[in-house]
Length: 439
Image 1 (cartoon, rainbow, N blue to C red):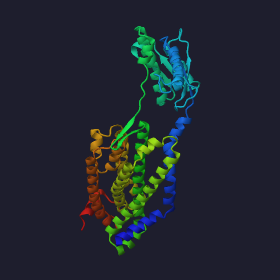
Image 2 (cartoon, one colour):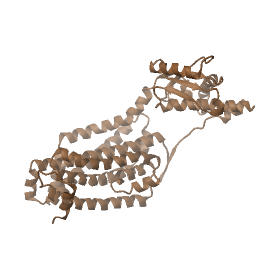
Image 3 (cartoon, rainbow, N blue to C red):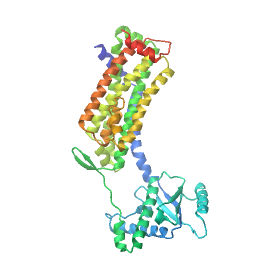
């Protein structure tokens, strides 16, 4: 009964704090901002780009423009038919979120490539132009372009230029082989690429970008919750130890009840917050999804929500025990930060690996790493969101994690009962190991 009383005390202390209410209300808004701001910024943040073109091949530039205009008229005639190049680069109505590219041809007669490169690099630095495209004379043979810009991370622009030039060169090669131009147009026409998510219950049309973004988003939420509540438990234990409140508690109950009561009580508070966030997120996605609701809602299934709760609980108890051990063993905030740093690294490693897991969820590295208990809450969850592994693997990972939590709980209780009453001296790892053997 004393354990239940401590659980209630810890739970009430957390959920009655103003910080709990504020974070519960503000966090969904911040989450929504993280979800929708990048999309909104992509739609409104891209303007016109001026790119100078030095065409030493003598045929690329004009055909680039011809292809763009032809493709634009194709769009009007048939919305279904897709041209072989990105048409919105020439369109006035840029509805795809990509920058509108404005090309300016440079007279190359009597001027070496090196001279033009040097001159246009200065223009880029002076912000007079956004980019400089150098098309060598041997482009048809070597298939190599040079693009200079102050911002080379605009993948959309880079890909657009590469695709347009490749299409023009391919057409030129076929025309030189005396192939009918209509056959050339048909042969170089682009292929529409549509992604369909295959699930156990069926298939659904989905965007690869949304899947990737949502997987990383869920990983970021899991990481922040585990880190936040771990730090909360560590500081709570340390404060009670420093203020000697813990001695009053020990006089009325044993240390194991205090240890387990704190972890379970704060864990329930965390679970309450996660449940509120999940319900708010579902409501917000349906209301303000800005045209992305079908993809996001397809991702946020009940199964994903259930697994999120399971792996949150597994991760919470693992890291809460580790952080509570640190809080009980140390005497100051500085010591706590030193001991907590390696635990934080254990959380960061799977977070970094999670990006790899979104690309190759069934690779050997992802498979093995997802069975390491401290990495399971994040990596196995990531594998499930991207491409659900066999149920046997999920159950095996959960079983391993539960066994590991049981071991950590036994270890933590041993260290906690001694460390919580140790004052003054900074503990060493050797001392903490000796505390485990005390009876």
